[in-house]
Amino acid sequence: MASRPPVVEGAPRSRERRVRGRSRWRGYVYVLPALAVYLVFAVLPALHTAYLSLFEWDGVTLGDWVGLDNYAEIFQDPILRRSVVNALVLVVFFSFVPIVLGLLSTGLLARHRRPGMGAYRFLFMLPQVVPLVAVGVTWRWLYGDDGVVNQALRAVGLDGAARAWLGDFDAALVAVGLVGTWVLSGLCMMLFLSGVQKVDPSLYEAARIDGAGPVREFTAVTLPHLRGELAVAMTVTTVAALASFDIVYVTTNGGPGEQTTVPGLLVYRLAFSEGKVGLAAALAVVLGCLILAIVYLINRLSRSES
Amino acid sequence: MNTVARSERWSGYALLTVMAIVVVIPFLSVFLASLQPAGTPVVGLTWPERWSWDNYETAWSVAGFSDLIRHSLVIAVGVVPACLVLAALAGYALGTMRLPGGNATAAFFVAGLTIPVELIVVPLYFDLRTVGLTNSYLGVILVEIALFMPFSVFWMRTHFRSTPMSLVEAARIDGASSGTILVRILLPLARPSLMTLGLLVFMWSWNQFLLVLVLIQDTTKHTAPAGLGFFVGQNSTDIPTLAAGTIIVMLPILILFVVFQRSFLAGLLQGATKG
Picture 1 (cartoon, rainbow over the protein chains, first blue to last red):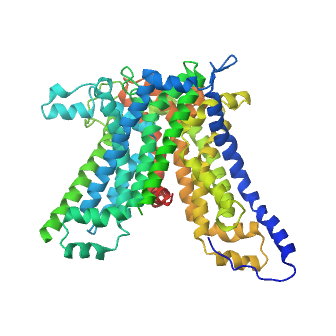
Picture 2: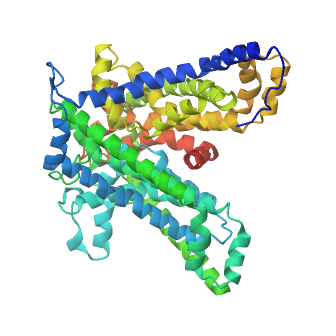
Picture 3: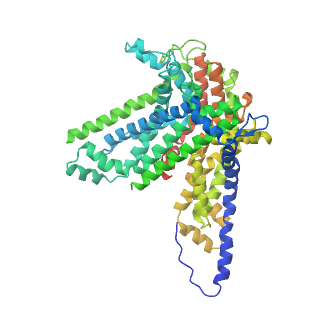
C-alpha cells in the first residue's frame, strides 16, 4: 500500500473529509459487478448447501427438517466414512509423494546452473494444462489388460503381476493415487526449482566452506528458502486430493466395490441419482470445512515458522 | 568435492529425465493408439504398421467431437472476456484506491479460492433449474465466472498494486477521472497480466467437468470433457477412436500451451506463489 502524507490543513478540513469520505466509497462501483457475480453464483450457493444439509429431501417433494442428522449419518455410514478415508489416502499420492520428489530433485540441482531446464519445464507442466478427464481416460487405457503398465511388466518377465489394475480390489486406490502423482509431481518440482533461483549462490559457497555436506546444505540453505513454495505446493495438492472427482469418475467411478469412492463422487451420486439431496449437501459441507481447515493450518504453520 | 558436486548434478538430471519419460509415455501411448486401425485391439506402446488418421475423422464427425468442441468454445468465449473485464475493474479499485473496508473485501474474494465445485453444485442445480438456466450455456458461464472470480480479482489486484502510484497521481493531477486512468493508462500496461489471466481462465473453463456434468444433463449439449467422460462409458472397447477423441479434447489447450508457454508458466507458478 502506498502511504499518503496526512492532510494538514485548516478550516475546510471537515467538509473536505466528508466529500472525500463519500468519494472513497465511490470506488466500489468498480468492485460491484465482480462482487455481485461472486456472491450470487458462488457464495450464496455455498450457504444454500449448508441450509440444505439440515433437511431430508429427495429433490422433488417437500423436504423434512432433520437438524444435524445428516452429519451424524456421515460419521456412521461405512460408505460415507470410507470416502473420507479414501480422500485422505489420496493426499499421500497427490501431495506427499510429489512434494518429496520435487524436494529431492531440487536438492540435487539447487547449487548448479541448470542448462536445458526449458524443455523439462515444458514437459513437467503438460499434465497440468490438459483436462483431468482426458488424463483419466488415458490412464484407464494404460492400466487396462493390454495397457502400457502390463506390457512393461510382461516385458521384464513379471507376467504374474500383470492385472486389470483399476478393477483390482487391493490395487485400485493406489493406481488412482498414482495418476495424481503423475499430474502433480511436475508442478511441485517446477515450483521448488523456480523457488531456489532466488537463493543467493554465495550462501551455498559459505555452507560448503563451513564443511556442510549435501544433506546439511539442503536442510540449512535450500529448505528454509522454499517455505513459501512448500506451503503453496501443499495447499494446491491437498485440495486436489480432497476435492478429486474427474480422475476417479472416469477411471473407476468409485469401484471396485467402494474401494476408490471419494466424497466428490458421493455428493454427485447421492444428490442426482439416489435422491438424498440433504445428505449430499452435508457431505459437501464436511468436505468444504475439511479443505478450509487444512488450508488454514498449512498457511498458519508456514507463517509462524518464519 | 568437485566429483561430489558433479555426481549430484548428474543424479539430479537423471531423476528429471526419468520423470520426463514417465510424463511423456501416457501421451505417446494415446497418440500411437489413435493411429491404429479402428476397432482393432491395441497393446500398450505399439508402433502403428501404417499411420491412419481415419480415427480422427470418425471421432470428429461420427462420434460428435466437433459439436463438443464447439460447445466448449461457446462457454469459454462467454467466460474469458467477462472474467477479464470484471477482474480488471475490481482489481483496479482494490489495488489502487483506498477503499473503506477494501482489504476485507479483497480477503473475502481470496477466501473463495478454496471453494470446491462440490460445495456449490447441488443447490445450483435446483436453483438454476427454477429459473430455466440448466441445460443452458448461460448458466454454466455465469457459475464459471463466479468460480474463477476469486483468483482473477486477486491476480489483477496484485498486478495493479505493483504499478507505480506516481502514474496514477500524475494523471489525477491532470484532471483525469478514475475511469480514464484505468482505460488510458493502466490497462495498456496490464496487457501481459491480462493475457496470462485470460489463458488460465480459458484453461479452467475448458477443463471444467463436474459443473457441466450436473448443469447440462442433455448429452447433446455436452462440452468436450463431459462428452469424453460420457463417451468412455459407452465405447470403452474401441480404443483407437477413444484415443483420437482424447487427443481432440486435449489439442486446443495443448496448442495454446505451446504457443503461449511463457504466459502459462507465469500464471501457473507465480499465480500460486503470490497467494
